[in-house]
Length: 292
Image 1 (cartoon, rainbow, N blue to C red):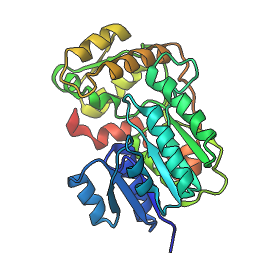
Image 2 (cartoon, one colour):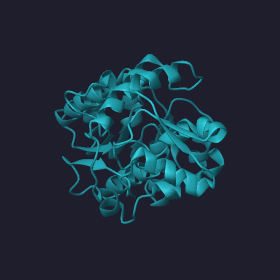
Image 3 (cartoon, rainbow, N blue to C red):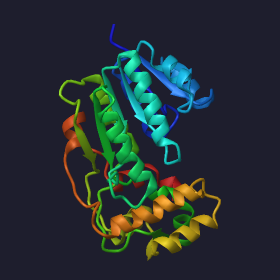
Image 4 (cartoon, rainbow, N blue to C red):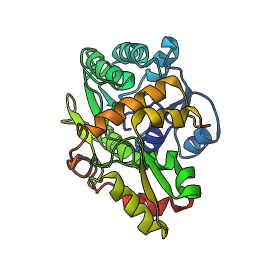
């Protein structure tokens, strides 16, 4: 029997895709979720073992990791990452885990102005020193970003962004992040100790993003550049789930990082690791056209 994999964040976007992909590959999955709901029920129906876990509860992490061979570790953009990483690493070490696939951020730098991004850099170092082999995934901006502000596109035909007209980046679909993690966990040889920045197939400016939206949606979508601090004010006045002080600080800070050109770049890791090309932005919009 193939060794069981623990997927944390299994009800979230990348974790859910990773769990489903592993199950499709006939690899036993233990899916860690915060509560039983329709998402966990759907995974259970596909054959996953469901466990309730809490990143702040060492005993629940020990129980979740007991008897698994490897694990997919993902933590949301929220306070508490470093404590969660320390607890998870110790529980994984005790359990004899042979590989942690850690979902970090492309913005994870020692001197990152984002508290979340800097914490991810420190979390990577904690895992590197934990004694458990680790692979770091560093996805760039999620391709789902415009969907978070779909109302402005849908109602006002406006793409608002704090990233600046001249900044260029290759956003990546969350499903492709999950596919990369699953592929590494399914065939871990050669991946321990590696860091993989992950990009989608197209480096685009914000005007180019607006142009693709216009073409696919069949109506003109105008790009409205917004300074990071002004963008923060927009979020503060919204009902967005990202309307927290922690998220707002992160978004404003990475806005500056993207504007500076730090997040430009491209590679073929998604295709090399999974064997198939990542989703393009045009394909993503066409696939989710009802949102816009």
